[in-house]
Length: 187
Image 1: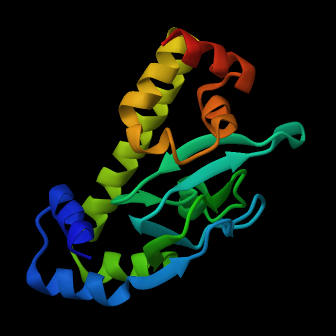
Image 2: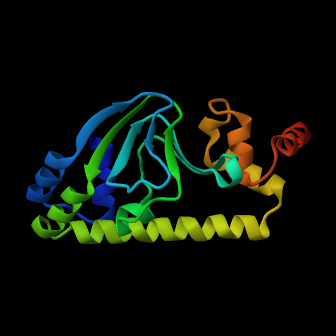
C-alpha cells in the first residue's frame, strides 16, 4: 500500500482524511497466473494497482492474440476506456504470473469524487498519463523501426525479457516472432 499512496501523492498531495478514505476502499487480492480479469465485450468495473506480478492487455482481431500493453509492479492497469465510459471493452486483461493487487471499483471512485477533493485531480492526471502513453505508442509504430521498437522495449521492460514468451514481445512491438528472433541475433 505504501507505493500506491506514494504514487497518489505524486499526483496531488493527499490530506490525512482523504488518504484514509481512499485506503478503506482499495481491496487487496491475489490473482493467479493465467487469470483473465476482464474479457472482451465486458465492462471494466475496477482498476488495479499492481503490487507484484505482471499483467498484459490483449486483443484478438481475426483470432490472433496481440499484446497491447504490459503492467509491471507498482503501476495501475485497467481497460481505462471501458472503465471511464462503462461501455464494453475491446481488450482482455491477463495475469502473466501470480499477481498481488489492490483494486478499486468504479462505484468507489465515484464516491471518492464526492468525499475527497483530491480524487478528481488524481484521475485527471492518470488520464493524462494514459493519453501520453497512447501518443508514444502511436509514435513508435509510425516512426521507429522494428529494431528500435525492440530496443525501446528492452529499455522500458528489462525485467520482462526473461519472464514472458517471445511471441508476446513480438506482438507488442508489432512484428512476427521470426522477425524478433532475427533482431535478437543481431544484438
